[in-house]
Amino acid sequence: MKRNQPESQVNELLIELHYLPCIDYISGLMRFERVQLEAQEHYQKQSYRNRCYVLTANKVDVLTVPVLQGTHHQPIRDLRVANDQPWQLNHWRCLQAAYGKAPFFEYYAPYFEPVYQKKWTFLFDLNLELLTICLKLIRFNRPLNLTELYDKSPSIGLFDGRSKVNPRNEPETYVFHQPVVYQQNFGQEFVPNLSIIDLLFCQGPAAPDVLLAGLQE
Image 1: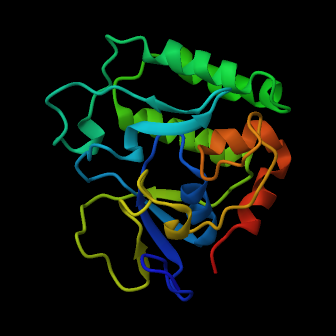
Image 2: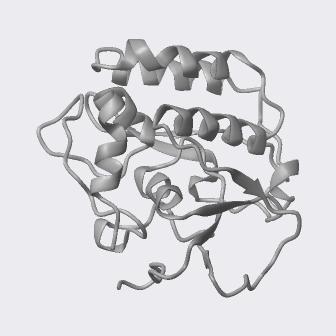
């Protein structure tokens, strides 16, 4: 077992919300019988909480949701999106350019486009809505519970996954997922652990099979 990976007898996960989560994150949700989403933490910069990675024609692109300055140490549910920037338009245009010709874009885009047409006040609400959509599309039907109190040291039997899935992780330090190669929309070399949206648009109904195949033992 690698460092930061859960023991096999642990059946509950505690983890924070991410923006269009990466494959390692989604694999973590699939691995556990019960999931608690951290709703009482304080925002952390340079994390997946407000960013995701997608594959475009020339590079891996980072989509970042801007947040209001001076709010970085606020409780996560109070963190406001900076809507003075056209981030929604930019993100949706990037997704269209990256995946418009992907096999399943036309089927799944209608689920996501309304999210980018709505004005969001809080990052937490945006992330929860997108996660709900992604989990519906991979046919994940276990309940997700929001924490009511911040617990610095969670109880035995619960894996504390908070901040363990982060952009600095390399394939050998992924927490829940061993990369499984699938056909992507661009490039000759496979890029692991992009946003789940890459897997959905490229593999469609087969996405859960890829996730299950890569679950860390």
